[in-house]
Length: 333
Image 1 (tube, one colour):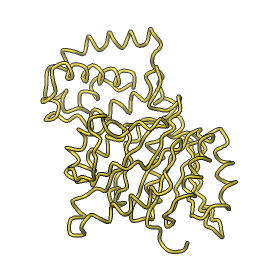
Image 2 (cartoon, helix red, strand yellow):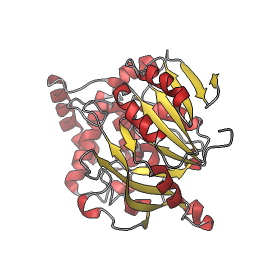
Image 3 (tube, rainbow, N blue to C red):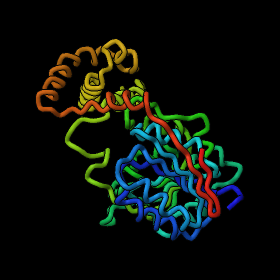
Image 4 (tube, one colour):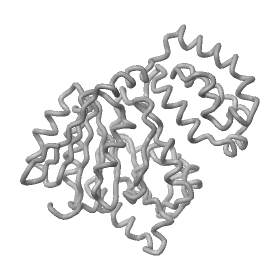
């Protein structure tokens, strides 16, 4: 495929070799063929590298394979993936998920329904993801649309439950990056700004099935990625949004912010400067002593894993290799 792919499919993977073959099979079965796959191996110590290299000559689509010598985290790996996008459109799929066979075809038809003279008003299109039991992971049970609809992002977030499938304009990510402060930072830290004031065309059709493993970054009893969580709150929860929250939601948000900052080793002075709310309201200062006591309790219960410390160590010594597997040749970079 020497011409430019229409769609770039991107995946960041960390120790998900046991799921990758299902994902690759779902990509190979796509009814729409003009796409590339950009896969990032985030320092995995399982069989991810072997799987990618064993499959490279058997696939009918091009692969860009980015491999890090050390774990650098999803935020930084996603930024590296963004830099390699060639398609007009981009869609993300997790390494433990699979597409339905007509997923890309459906999403492409959907995005081409957007009138050209209104394309700058749209971020892209959204379809549904379900778990292995067919339960929507995208929409709240009483918010599943029964037909296609157009919503501005600020209204769409009232519908969303969690993980959706988004085919969007690659230009959304021109000069955009996630903050690289921990292995993980919530996607809303950047996407809430990328999508602000933009529309989506939304379809109720299921295009992705999620096989989320028990060791997913979204799960776990310990507090991880706390520095990333603190920065996310500072980026997303602006003061004009915060003041509209119910009182107890404000309390919970403030306490969690202080907890994330404390466990993320962010100093009080820096934490106060980072967030609009701590600069414009006295409530966070009043709640700091209570938050500090809860932090001590977290430590006594051994609930905290300081992932940012390992992140800081790895980010100083990692090396990246990039290989491009085309159907007839391979490039090393």
